[in-house]
Image (cartoon, rainbow, N blue to C red; front, side, top):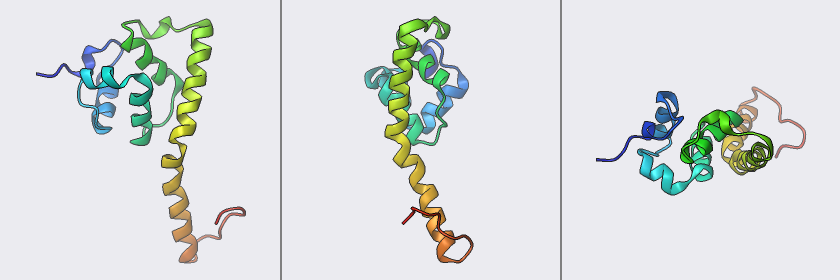
Length: 116
């Protein structure tokens, strides 16, 4: 039987449910993927980016309490988090652009300048 995600330190019911919705079903899968790939999967599944949420996962996979992240390590994690947000942005922004295109086609809104 697979170990539940909540077996990983810092992962409670809400985060476990978000991982489940993103297709990450157990602790072993998340450990194999690592924090960055797992968090990117959350972002692509529609979870709003939140820095603390990201480093909670990183710390948990290291078996550390969430508030153990400080100083240069925290700054380095912030850079990784920002890069993940940029990487996930096309998946998060594309539906909004498509909705605007549709609304413009039916005459509900005018296209914003610079949008095709």
